[in-house]
View 1 (cartoon, rainbow, N blue to C red):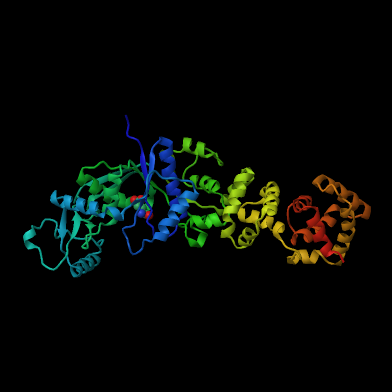
View 2: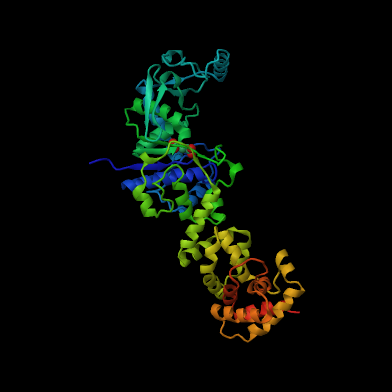
Length: 473
Ligand code: GLU
């Protein structure tokens, strides 16, 4: 029976969950799901100066929001440092690693010399074969791994292919610092091994680390997991994705009104695709996703494309789920807070009634909420610049006539309102759009909105008439 797949997502909690990290998590999650395996979550918190609890929370929240659930409890790397130390000592005992007492001054000297000789700054291995008799007092040693000195190493990577490394480029790097804390190199290998990780899927910025990490695997006689180093995400200009290109945190995307399902669908196609399929259900994604199909070239993040996909998902959402998503982000956005404070039974109903229309034209939930603001507007309505211009004397006069007609209309349905206004527009010799314009301005305070008949039915007869009356001279 073949071993079941175990992947892991292993963020360092030094900031928010980054869009690139989210894609890495998604690929790990999908591959685990595709193979019926597990995805574990390891928080790489050994850098205590930079790791924060807040960041751990942001990462967990981000993953939860994206519905990328991990198996078991998150594992803190810090909680495992005794085990890391144990392995470092074991490697020393097996003569695969050694104590190094080189002082900072000597290291500086070494770097200077290497620079002078135009060589890469590398530890020269001076403690590699020393017996303990020469140990100086007063210096806390570090432990260094014995990297092979010659020959070369081939790293088999599912995405990148076979990568050849010359062993002389792998120096005897530190695995345990002088304060007995493990380096990333050691901690990651020990943890991946102990957690039974079978597949390492991570950004290709870790490719050279991977070659160096195999030294520890080999020294311990452990099997190197399958590696899949995925190309980083770039902006449309080809540069590595950065703040300059736009928002980077998952939380920001949530607060800009993206649906988790849309973001997932967009992210999966950054570096992987399935023919020309653009919109795919989670089920299909799981069925189709395989690490062997990940592209080698850098993926480009296209904000417009994400927006378009989000719009498609909003339109396709059932109203109940959509309403839940809208409500959940209200407290996160400026105008949403006011709305959240007012939501009573009546407003709920109106918002629900408006959703089918609102979702037709919104690319983000923020746009959708903006479109719903008219519902919550309080009389006297305030007007934007264009609406103010529309409600000039002529506009108000049109409204005056319209008010009389509408006051006589008791069957307040879109169809009836449509008929009434069409008849009236013919009577006074104006186009329907000419009378709809001031009407829309009076009802919503804006020059653009949902169809004016929909606005009237959503607001209801009393409120609509009251808003019109306010503008009639
Ligand atoms: N903690 C590392 C990072 O956030 C990832 C290490 C790994 O995947 O091996 O970049």
